[in-house]
Amino acid sequence: MDRLPEVALNRIWLSQYPQGIPADVDVTAYASLKEILEQSCERFAGLPAYSNMGVAMTYRELDQASRAFGAYLQKDAGLQRGDRLAIMMPNLLQYPIALFGALRAGITVVNTNPLYTARELEHQLKDSGAVAIVVLENFAATLQQVLPSSAVRTVITTQVGDRFPAVKRLLTNLVVKHVKKMVPPWSIDGTTAFNDALAAGRARTLDEVALTRDDLAFLQYTGGTTGVAKGAMLTHGNLVANLQQVHAWIARDFVEGKEVTVIPLPLYHIFALTANMVFMKTGAHTILITNPRDIPAFVKTLKHTPFTAMIGVNTLYNALLNAPGFGEVPLKQAKLCAAGGMAVQRAVAERWKAATGVPIVEGYGLTETSPIAICNTLAIKDWTGNIGVPIPSTEVAILDERGERVPLGEVGEICIRGPQVMRGYWNRPDETAKVFTADGWLRSGDMGVMDGNGSVKITDRKKDMIIVSGFNVYPNEIEDVVMLHPGVLETAAIGAPDEKSGEVVKIVVVRKDPGLTEQDLLAHCRKHLTGYKVPKLVEFRAEPLPKTNIGKILRRELRAPKPA
Image (cartoon, rainbow, N blue to C red):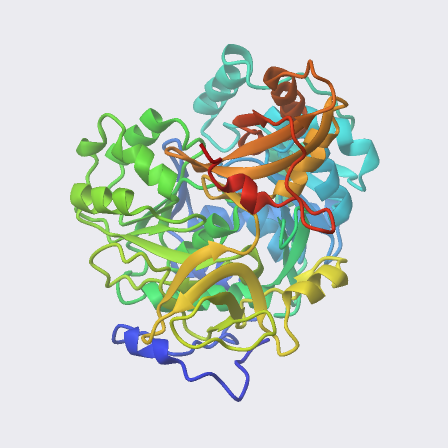
């Protein structure tokens, strides 16, 4: 959708907008993300676009490399408009090249977590119908296991240092592969090296593709309202709208071509993906952090990077605050430290403001909303405890189970309507119907309240979703894996508070085999689940788990403290 409905809400939140932020943005200004990229590459050609591990790439180089990669996909790999390309790597210079090259060729991108297990990867490749993939060699062994059951016919492999100058490239790849031994053995016939693909593409001409706002840009996988991973269909129009909305939100404070931004969250995550494109639109120099879990290395990078903006999650900001040497990071230029993906804790927000002088600006959104829908303004001085107000061209309503509005100040489900809202779930009309009301509201699954100024506060999650360091973990998926163990009679997965990650996964288990141990279960889970999904806590119970009268396990009762 390009416009708000003619009969719009009384948007009480507009009174909270700082001067200069419009109520609505022009979502028709660009037909596609391709237009935005090409405009930025022309306007900011000589400026650095991305840096990684001390190596920079200018907008001109990004333009040339992404054009070559797109041409390779069209002419050598034979991909057609609308075909799906999976990208499976951490934050490296190769990522924006592959991302923008695919979009310029009219290809739909399927962002893929490189830490996926074979089971998780197989589902995403098969469900999306991806016919090509770019994979970091470190994860090629996982791909090798599932390739025969997928539709993938083109495999492009890359190494960590592939976009570095020759000597640094050789040394980096040597250390990663042979010293740190981070590349498990793999063997896939007919692969093409990333740099070879670029070389082949430079000898070709990229066919111009006249994209529209209705063309599919991403199949961005999410659990949605259940634990079954589904591809949210995000069009070029959805992403262009969100870029326009967020750009309007920050434009008063950002100077085009002058900002230095830091992205430590992985680009396969929707928050980092969209933030990266907003920064690209403004001509910013974006520092890509490959492994933010290596806090000492991250702090070292920040010491040499007088940044003006950074995105993160609560746990990352907390880790930085507790890291030796963080006090030496230059912060005078910092304008924006944004957070999403999980709630920002008061203690972390207050410590961050005291240490840096910059408040953490919390926002809210879903994969299904591209993602940003609600945000605090950059004018806030301190942590508010709220997720903010609807951004331009966005409507938010608090609805009850029947889809009726609840009075201001009363709890209901946070529902969203706007041009950034997805088209629906890929090949899942049944699931799409579940999350949209008859009049077009997207049900978020989060419970909250709106005050008289239009500010929104989350009170609870309607879904039983567990959020581990900003990543969604769905109990159904964990329970399915645990139940595969022959020693388990029944189980339930719930979230448990954790100082470092916000929450961790806890499983409550009734044993079929009395000899089943915690170690047995965790070893089983590690075979089938990405690290952050693996349970950290196991509780065994002798009695059956509490259930409703139709047999559904009552997770809420399991989360409640056991009576003494």
